[in-house]
Image 1 (cartoon, one colour):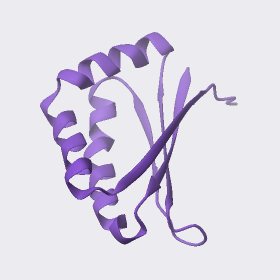
Image 2 (tube, rainbow, N blue to C red; image 1 turned 45 degrees about the vertical axis):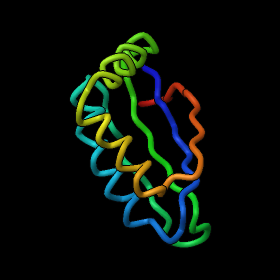
Image 3 (tube, rainbow, N blue to C red; image 1 turned 30 degrees about the horizontal axis):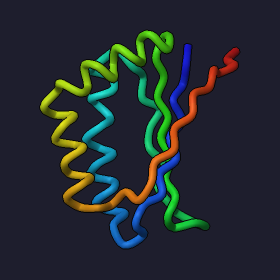
Image 4 (cartoon, one colour; image 1 turned 135 degrees about the horizontal axis):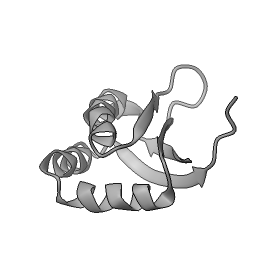
Length: 101
């Protein structure tokens, strides 16, 4: 299993727009075989950081998701929404492997 951990730098004045964007993605990761662990938005502390995490069986499964995502209308609509609202300033991705019981 591989988990994609994403750190977003967001516009603090557009947290609501980012939440809408996040809600668009939750079912899309599942649609393509992943397990979404949720988005985490600012509450206390830094008002410009948000996080997300989702897992796939392998990097190969993640790469397959990326290919399908590129051709999917709902995924493209989510990307377009983020661009239109300009709610995301920067995205950083890293891949981790979970240790589970």
